[in-house]
Image (cartoon, rainbow, N blue to C red; front, side, top):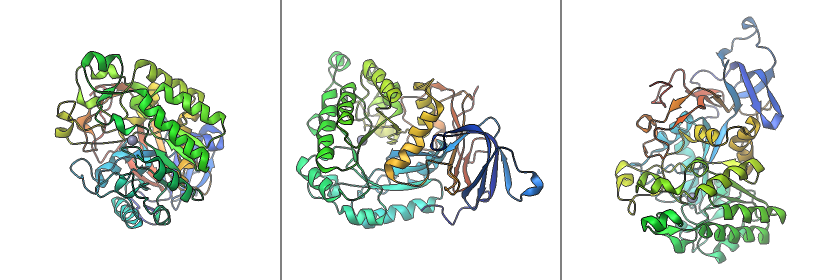
Length: 447
Ligand SMILES: [Zn+2]
């Protein structure tokens, strides 16, 4: 486990004093002092211990909301193979600055994470960064090519927390079906990128905007059809399943049908699919190119409703950084995806204003820990002291030139948001502190 037994940046015996502690796993919402000893939650106290009673460091958290650490189940860290886009150091530091205490890394690196040795290598390399925890996701098929099954059991033994060919769907239904059968007794879920490969090359959602612009589009059907296919595999095999970055209203209907059948399937939504629509591509702005594409205004509204109804219960950034050259190419040549870690939390809270805070925290923490079977998601005594502290009303403007991530493209550039990460704590170590930043940070209000 990254950081365990190591990292003593500020000491691992800390009293976090006076925060509003929100933990859905404990049904807790109140002012508490979180007592951390040796990197573990030791107590949640109604009052701060007297300074004379403890030799621990005290951190004043008045004005902050303190939650179980946020876990991003879907990031692309680009290393090995594409360190010009992102490195483990920049990606994991960006995660800390975005308020995440852990991320799950998709396997579409070069080479891909498709055997046990590469899983172990990523665990070693990410632990050396000593920022946030990094959980490898193993590929379903060798080289993510959809043909030969990857060694799922050896990846599981090495520490993979899930399996996915994300970046694309697993093209062969036969291979996916056999993979799910073979892995049916493993606890690791399958994570589906739902886009039918026959629409590869599309640059935009297929609808009125794509018609007007004369651009090749990918319709909602592309997503919903693969979602339905993969849910049927889950039903047939009993395998735990998760749909990545749901974007289309049609897919929500498929999900609701699956739930009614009692199928074990969860789903995530990204901040950009909760906020942005295909009209943003009217000016051929390649920053807004992403897979699955930004969809219609109606789809965006449907995503918000799906979260409010609990049909979608997990948030993910789908952090997918690219170099400036790769994003500034003409739309048809620009790489799909953009940097997400440092703006995800603010953009998600903004999209879902009014949703109970406990639900927001569950969707960013408790539910993700449950999906991936990883520690965290709770401040219960004995848990690792992984915590995310937020300011709920500290307006700031998104300035991508200040991102820690190497990827500077984002559809949120210039947007103003209220919620900001205040502090990120991993195993009792403060790995990010907005009050004393060691890295470039989002600009505070008024700058
Ligand atoms: Zn994907």
